[in-house]
Image (cartoon, rainbow, N blue to C red; front, side):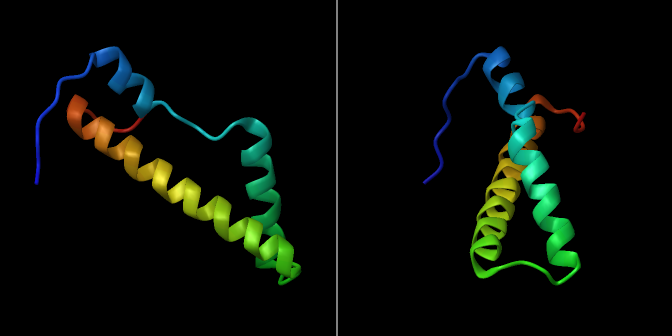
Length: 74
């Protein structure tokens, strides 16, 4: 069931600009490098998978916000 709600443009713009905090992004980059080198421990693999899942979800939410705003990603 789809329903329509209204939201302030500023709120949708803020959603379209969401990013990982710098420390989380740095950690994801570090884990990606270790993954590419085949060096992840089991714990790091679980952390990496969780961060990737969160990153993908964030990207989808941002894309939906951009679509609502009818503009391309920044």
